[in-house]
Image (cartoon, rainbow, N blue to C red; front, top):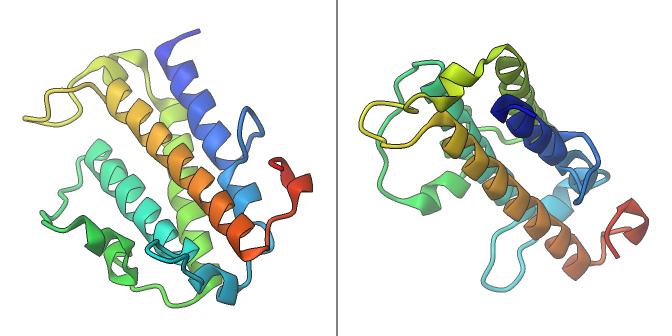
Length: 164
C-alpha cells in the first residue's frame, strides 16, 4: 500500500466510505436546520463545526493547489459562516459546500503521486503533504465524532446509523 493509498482510504473513510467510524455523510444524515444550530452548553453547534471543517479543508486544498491563503489570528473565526469565504446562510448549502471540498480533495488526491505527497507541503511549513493530509483526516474524524456526540445529546442520533 502506498502513501497515496493510505491517504485516499482515510479521506474516503471520513467522507463517504464506511470504515471504523461513521462518515461525515452518515453523521449529517437527516439533520434539520434547527438541530444544526443547537449548541450544547459551552460548545459549538453542528453548523459551526461544519464551517470549521470547510475552512480548514478548503485552506489546505488551496495551499495544495498553490492558491494563496489569507492570514488569520483567531481560530474562533473558523467556526463562523464568514470563514467559509461564501457567507453561507442556508443549512443545505453548508452541507453542499463541505461535500464539494471533500470531493475535490478526493479527486485531486486520485491524481497525486507519492513524490508530491512526500514533498514539502508549502514553503516554510517544514512538513510533507503526506503528514499534513494525515493530520487533516485526524482532524476531520475528531469533528465527525463531535457531531455524533452532539446529536446524541440532542436526541437526534439513530444508533442504527452506526454508533450506539
